[in-house]
Length: 281
Image 1: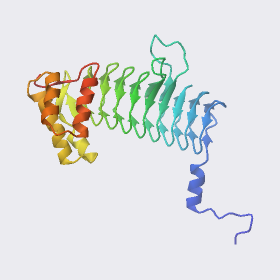
Image 2 (image 1 turned 90 degrees about the vertical axis):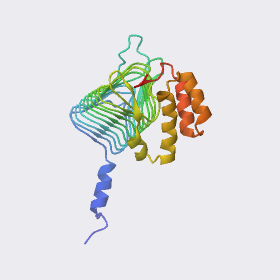
Image 3 (image 1 turned 90 degrees about the horizontal axis):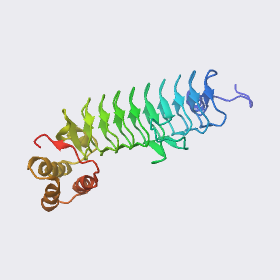
Image 4 (image 1 turned 180 degrees about the horizontal axis):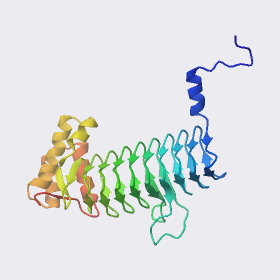
């Protein structure tokens, strides 16, 4: 029999209570000026500096380090020895107040480092539902979109942009200021020196266009018609021996105008570093 002062705690109620209870291990060093959400768990020997925000349900594993300027979203996982918002490795940095922003649901694996921004953009941003694998480095002022996967030991230099659903395989080196567009797949061990246009698969050494990222596009529910239109645009760009300007004119003249083909041509026109070449170029 349950009295008025007793509470019946079903497994569901207990689970919910645990989910909303913040736990900080006694050996962790957490600034009293850090903003900690509900249900956050901070593991043994972790460090959380002042001027940090950690969203609800996020787990800071043992020995992880969250430096000043970190803004970590809800339900993230920061694994052991990862360092979030470390000082930029940029000689122009003068100690200005900048941020490293991590979106909701993102996982940062062991020994990964994400530097905060500089005066250039004032922030480094990792989007929602990303996976940044072991030993990755994301340098100052990078902007990484949503649902991005960056493989083990990949090194991303300063002010790189990586758009939604890009997949950068392990051991890749990305030059500063490069832009990697959406739905791209980059072969492991690549050296990315130029911009990567949307929807493509790139590989080999030196890096070249190797076709469409068909598997990734199908997983994202692109239709056969959309994929065929994208393929025709890249056939003109990479297989007809045209220079880039003439290829873009030919795409706009001969391809049915769709959001995908328009995105391709606009991306290429806006490229500051030039796009990756084709295997036949």
